[in-house]
Every structure is written in structure tokens, then in C-alpha cells.
Amino acid sequence: MRVLAIGDIHGCRGPLDDLLAWVQPASDDRLIFLGDYVDRGPDTRGVLNRLMELRQSHPIVCLRGNHEIMMIDAYYRKRAELKMWLSVGGTQTLGSYGPAPGLTGTLDDVPADHWQFLQRDLVDYYEDDEYIFVHATVDPTLPLHEQPENALFWDFLPDMMRHHSGKIVICGHSSQKSGWPKIIPGAVCIDTYAHGGGWLTCLDVHTGHYWQVDLLGRRREDRLEYQR
View 1 (spheres, rainbow, N blue to C red):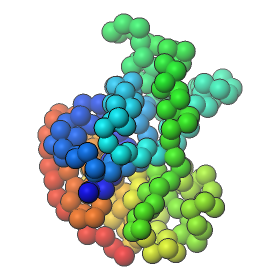
View 2 (spheres, helix red, strand yellow; view 1 turned 90 degrees about the vertical axis):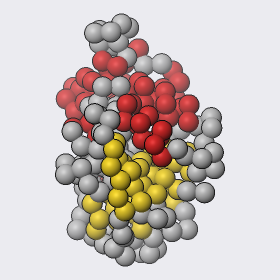
View 3 (cartoon, helix red, strand yellow; view 1 turned 180 degrees about the horizontal axis):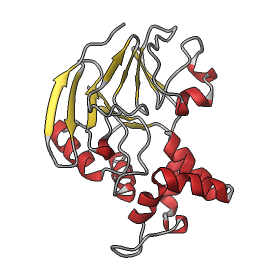
């Protein structure tokens, strides 16, 4: 059984499908998605549909990202929250929910099962015997159940992130515009800027092998070594 972590998708359904077709997860491979499924890319609706389909055939874990938080806040809170969300990719998300090609939707056009997925089916973190999976960062001194929200969803990658448990942290959020994963002592970031001309990354966390696909359908792969 492989444990496969996939970085920030940001509405890029095409690269997600291409990546899964290439990696070909087996039915017992665990897929761990690191959050930020929505916003910025062209097909948030398609991405959420794909993730919900995958749950029927694979053991998957979907983490909560800051963009999911902003989308929910835009729906339930004040107008200022909506304005903020639209400015950071919400406009593209609503475009994917339009009633017809070329028309922009509204938050009321987001189907109920998508809201349920975003609000009830995402988790703040996940860990196994060797690895910790979070969207953004961790406070190295705290156990996971005591992590502040800023660390889990909003903070950017520091120079090192050695958690006191000794486990390697696998995260996204801090966009690597170079397109390559970033390795620091104690952690690896695999948000490789899929929506902005970079790559969508899938990492086999046990072997360090990773696969990447971009919006043009190009592929590349390599292997990384953790800095413990």
C-alpha cells in the first residue's frame, strides 16, 4: 500500500485527472489531499466532483485549506468576507458554477453536496506512524490536537519545521513558483503552483518518488530525500 500526498489543486481538474491516470492509485493506496481544492484555477466544481467520486473507490483523506475556509466564510458571513474571497480566486470558482458556458454562477449555485463536503468532510490534519499531513504548517512544540488555526491553515513555510514527535511534516500552502517541492529540515512542501504555470505534485511519502503534471499536460518525475 502506498501513501500518496497530492498538493494544492486550486481548481485544476485537468492536471488532477492526468496525474491520477499516470500514478494509477491502487484500491488500497491511501490518497491524502492537502487542501485548497477551490479558487484560482478554472474548474473548482470539477475538482470537488472528482474528489467525491474518489471516495467511493479509494481510502482518501481530504484536509481543509485556507481557501475552503474563505469560501465558507463568504457564504455565511459578512459582505466583506465575500469581497475578500472573490479577490483571491473566488471569481474563478463562481465561474465554474455558471448555469451555462460563459456565465458566472453565485454561491447559491454551489450544490448542497459540495457544501457538505467542504464543511463536514474535510479534516484539519492527519498523521500516521511516520508522517504528519497539514495544509500549511505546525507549531513544532505542540501536539496536533493543540495546534492553532494560524499554523494549520495560514502560516507560511519557515526555515525548519521539526515536530517534537520526530515525524516528517508533509504540507502545501506555501506556493513554490519554481515548480519544485521545497525540502526543509523536518518537512516537505508540495504546493508547486499548479494554477499559476507550475505543476501539480503527487508524492509517494515512503519512497520520496514524486510525479508532476501541468496545465499543458506535460509530465515529469523525480525523487526527493527528507532532511530529518
